[in-house]
Image (tube, rainbow, N blue to C red; front, side, top):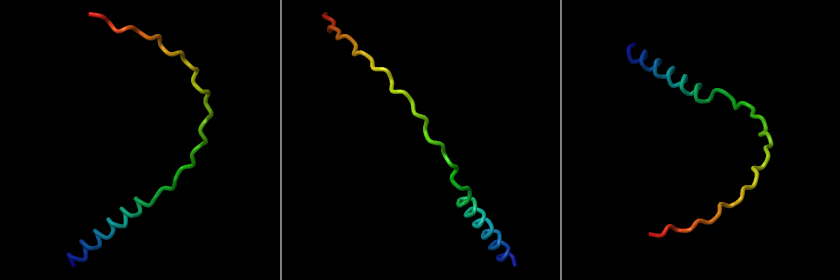
Amino acid sequence: MRQTKWFTLVALALIALMLAACGGGATPTTAPVATEAPAATTAPAATEAPTA
């Protein structure tokens, strides 16, 4: 009787875990909104190396 009780408890726990893992469908996602391209920047001016 005691072994049957533990077996039933473990079986129910495994079934609950399997249902939780398989549950929930994918939610639909919306298409990404088009954004503007970033504005072009100018290259920084070259700097001279410091002298000792």
